[in-house]
Length: 631
Image 1 (tube, rainbow, N blue to C red):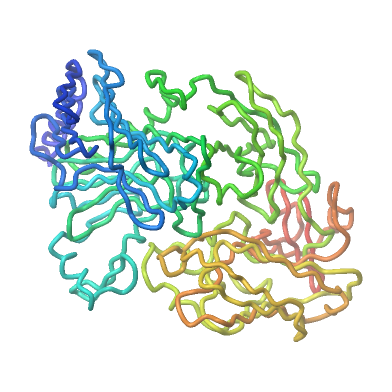
Image 2 (cartoon, rainbow, N blue to C red; image 1 turned 120 degrees about the horizontal axis):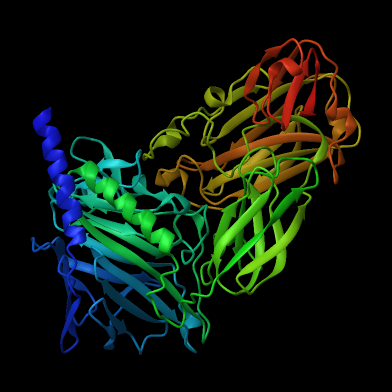
């Protein structure tokens, strides 16, 4: 044990000694080829704009034959194909080279930056619209780092990590008879491997990379403002191929139902800079070091050392306080500043900035570029399924105070029941905490009966309805209702165009033809894809005192499709625009069952006060009577 500890100390010292021994940055040019070095990391860039060699502390080349390169997919896959290159800046502390294409319809530039004392190389890409670029439907754009065959230990987070298949194993798996679907293969041992098992939510992706026994190569995004789709987007990180292990920095992608982009003449965007970071040590030391580096890069954003016309350093903090007028919680609401006109999930040509509201609804969104935005918002807990949109947010100056932002989401006087908690994810349901894997759609049953007040969403409701059949929700009412009732289904994802018939007490009230395929279910997702909301309003008289049912009958699914539910709720009564109706606020003392708005049973108590709950909205049941209560 002592020897192992001493070895660990020695390895840790090796990691940091290299970082502290700072040499000047050197840059040499030979035609349109370049060599850059800061004494720790050295790279060779060919005239094709690819890094062909990358070494760390004089060690071997960590790259495979294709090296580090930019490519994109429109009607076909294409590369940068540079026509020019130039040195942008060269000092003892800094070197920057840019490669440009000046002939394509949609023209890209790719820059490489090396800084003194930083164990890596920064990369950025610029998209330039031309008079003919609107005909280019940009589906994917990425920078790939292909590593030598020894880098088979992947790391994305504390759950998503471990060995990926070797080049040799993938060479067998990629044979036609072993292909299951795109980038999905049956391995020699019968298991299924797919790159989609390693997808990650953008908002959680502070770093990802690959390691061998003593070296690591990492993608550190530094910021998420330039990625398409916003915080709910998922993207690829690391995966295996027969050519090489690969770690990817996606810039633009359609995965999991996101949208392609078309650049008009004169439109420009800069992606990055992000950092390709190198280190050495044991695997745990390299992971810890990469996390420290990622935190440092995020804290330094926007980079004062980067001078580019598309990269302003003069940023703003946009602050305010969200007030939910219906009395529902104002905390834990995700706010996003993005372009007007469409959901952030479909956007990609502009820049996005986001923050979560605090306990009192206050928020501060830092480092926002000057301009005009729409403020979007959605709850990440509770039962609010609407989306906030406030247009014409003018951002200028160093501090922009929006004051009180009022939001009146759809809310009825009486919440009859709710399954799940709204956060645009299928978490909290059966199998939603399973690691990503191909074929999980086989696990949920075709038919089920969920009893409000008795069933547990963690074991009795599933991450997705994936088979033709009927999921029935049974519940009791203590009285007859008048007016209208509103059924809301917040869907975390929809795959392969399913159809859902909604019947209340045996009478069909809606047919949801969900013409959407976000591919989430068959690409290993367990939490969601492209979120959407469906509603069904019907006469409350369809409901009656005693036992009632709402049935969701799915059809049109052959295999590997369906709906991933975020939450489902049934409400009745008049629309609430300010506060909660008095009938829901006070409940006489006495034995009572209490539940979260997500349907999770809290317990049985002699009185409401005995429960000792925090302030918020809860579901109560006393005998045949139930409803919501605000504490």
